[in-house]
Amino acid sequence: MEIFLWGVVVVGYLVAIICVYKVYVFAFSLFNEVPFVASDTSIIRESLKYLDLKSTDNFIDIGSGDGKVVFLAHKLYPNLKSYTGIDFSTPLILQSNLKRKLMFLSNVKFHKKDALMYNYSQYNKVFLYMTTDMTSRIMNVIKDQLPEKSIVVSAVFGMGEFEKENEVTVHKVKLNKKEVTITIWKK
Ligand SMILES: C[S@@+](CC[C@H](N)C(=O)[O-])C[C@H]1O[C@@H](n2cnc3c(N)ncnc32)[C@H](O)[C@@H]1O
Image (cartoon, rainbow, N blue to C red; front, side, top):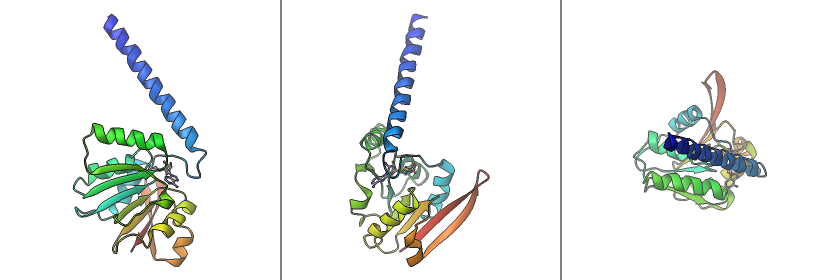
């Protein structure tokens, strides 16, 4: 009985620590132009379909948050060459790297980087869940760096100014009774 009570206390403390950590990470991300909000699983699944993922692909989620998209991409498409997430939040990158190590995933990587100052030349399949303005700024950085035949998918938000000058396809899909926009750019 005593062991059971200690178990309840320890689990209670762990749950409390995780809750405080999540509130802290979310609250601090509100100071950023694009705060951390994890995307919906059904939206990620649908968006990944448009990337036409293959075993030779190097996938990246720009602004990877807690790594949800990267881990889901690995689960749904386990044979890709590499899976990368970048984010400028230290705790979110630490959290993602901890999970990656616990899962022994050697071809999954997370880097603490500014999305507007990174070299994207090794990636050919890109996922974005940012604001329209940030997506358009990132597109202007990555469009020349990405190799030929690369595909970029932006979930929910469009590509802003970038859409007017370049070829993008906008898909409207119904998910859980809500209409969701998925914007695709192919190089
Ligand atoms: C809306 S969240 C998306 C998280 C994740 N991609 C998902 O779909 O679940 C946006 C993320 O982008 C990160 N972010 C915003 N601006 C950034 C920048 N300039 N460089 C790197 N990361 C950035 C934030 O820290 C946040 O975690």
